Length: 132
Image 1 (cartoon, rainbow, N blue to C red):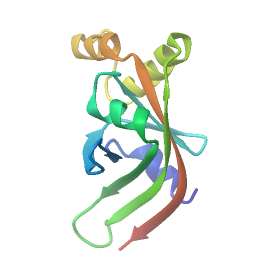
Image 2: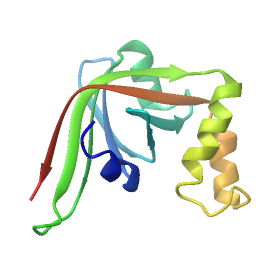
Image 3: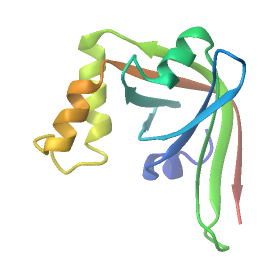
């Protein structure tokens, strides 16, 4: 995918899922981008996880900047799935959290790790990027 360096450098992805009434649900999330996919740690009780369990269609946007030439973004549509196996979830959750915390010994990092029981894996199908 184009802009891989940009996607690896950014910290916030806006994730849109479809709720049970067919409406959009958009949330900013922490993520990791690797091997053409996005990984998001969460809990199966969250609205986004429940929505993905029922409907795997998603859209996303990662963007930055308010003045040219620093306006850059990538948006796309794709499919998401929930990874639930603890032996896969925990190492991925740790990698994601280490993008945001210097150490997992941090109290907030540990709380988030303890609450993470699944990983959302996003496979983009179509993307659009921009730079102004």
